[in-house]
Amino acid sequence: MKRGRTLQLGLAYFAPYGVGLGHASRLVMVANELKRAGAEAKFSSFGEAAGYISMHGYQCSTVPPVEFAWSMEGGLSVKDSLANVPLWFANFSRQVNQEIRNMMMCKPNIVVSDSRLSPILAARLLGIPSIVVLNQVRLLLSPRLRELAVSRLFEKLIGEFLGSMWALADRLLVPDLAPPHTISAHNVWDIGSASRKLEYIGFTSPSNRPTEESMDEVARMLSIDRSRPLVFVHVSGPLRTRLTLISLALESLKLLDSKVQFVISEGRADGDPSPRRVGKSGWYYEWCPVRDEIFAMSDLLVLRGGHVALSQALQYGKPVVTVPIMNHGEQLGNSSKVAQLGMGIMLHPADLTAQQLAAGISEVLADPEYGKKATELQELSKRSDGIDNLVQIVSAYL
Image (cartoon, rainbow, N blue to C red; front, side):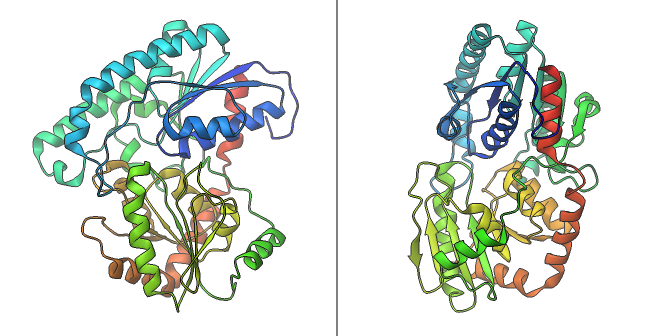
C-alpha cells in the first residue's frame, strides 16, 4: 500500500521497546500512515517511549519496564544489570499477562512488536498474527567480556535462544540495508535458525528532506552561516547515559568555537523546545523541534551508536563521529560497522577527552572521503523505503 491510498482497515497493536525514542518513533510513523488509510492503532510500551506515543495522540498502555541498568558515568552497568535479573523475569511475566489482557480487549488483526518479546509471546498464545521489527536479534556482550572464551560461548548460546524466541513471530523484519552494507550486521548475522526468517526492508527512520525555505528560516532564526561548517550533536539513548556525552561535547565544541558552528540536542521529549546560546557559535536544545532541518544543514553529525540515528544520518548522506555507550554491545557493533563502511569514525567512550573528540570532529570535516562515502551509501538507501515496506506488510494483515 503506497502512502496516501485509502482503504478500510482493521486494528494494529504496536508494542515498541521503551528505552530511547527510536523504536517508538518508527512505529508512530507507521501508525500515522495506517491511520490515514482508515486503520485503528493502539500502543503498549514503557519509559520515555510511552510519553512520546501519548504526545502523538495515541492510546498507550504502560507496561512494567524491562531494561538494563546504567552507570552515572554514562555506560552499561553490568553489575547492576545482573542484579536486576530477578526483576526482569518478574516484569517480563507481568508484561506478557498485561499484553494478553490488552489484546483480548481490543482484538487486533496484527501485533507489531519493535524489539520486545512479550507481545510476540502473548500474540502466539492468543493465535494472533505477529510481526517483529528489530535490529538486534542477539545480545552482544562488551568487548572486555568477549575476551573470555566462556563469555563468547554464553553469547552464542543466548543468541541461539533469542533467535528461536524472535522466530515465534510470523515475520522477522530488519530495518536496514541488505548485506554487505547492513549497519546492524554484528547484531543480526550468524544467529542460527532465525537467520532464515530475516527480511531486510530498508531504513525506517524519517527520510522526508526539509525544504530549502524551512532550512533558510531555521538558519535565520539561529544566525547560522550556511557557508561555514555546522556540527549537530544529537544525543539519544537512555536518559542517564546522555549527560556525560553532552558535557564532553560542550567542552570540545568550545575548543572549536572559532572554526565551526554547532547545535546540541539533549533529546528529552518533555524538554524545553527553546534554544539557548552556547559560546559564540553554538545552540543548545533540551528538545529540538527543528531537528530535521538541522540534520539536513549539518556537515557532520556526532551521535551515539543507536541504529535509528545512524540510519537517518546515512539517509541524509552525512558523515559521522560516533561515541557509543560504554559496554553497549549493540551500539559498539553499529559504530564499528559505520567506521568500516567509511562514512565516519568511532571514538571509544572509555577515558575519552574533549580534546580527542574535537580532534575527531576536525579529522572528519577535513577529509572529503568520509562525506563522499556517506553520499554513496545515501544513494544505496534510496532504493528501499522501509516505512512504505512496513506499512504494506502490516496492512496486508488488516
